[in-house]
Length: 73
Image (tube, rainbow, N blue to C red; front, side, top):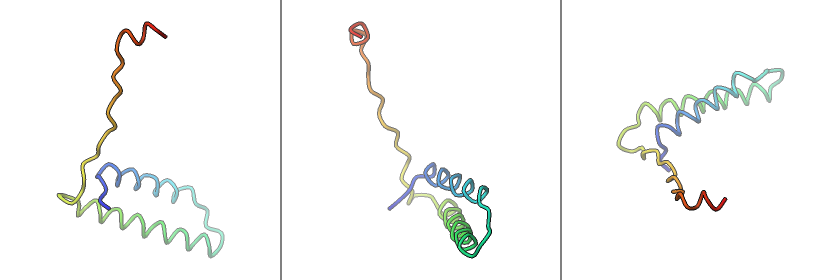
């Protein structure tokens, strides 16, 4: 599945936020931290090698509101 550059950047932000809030106190936390760091590296690599294979970010179309619709409200 291809991701847009904006989606990769958003995922990177979320992973980095999660890493910054982690308190490593045991083995399970350390394992989770390594997984998140690996995820961050994979996202960086995906963003760096991005190009023609990435799909453009598609925004949802805005709903048109007609003036007479507002008068009825």
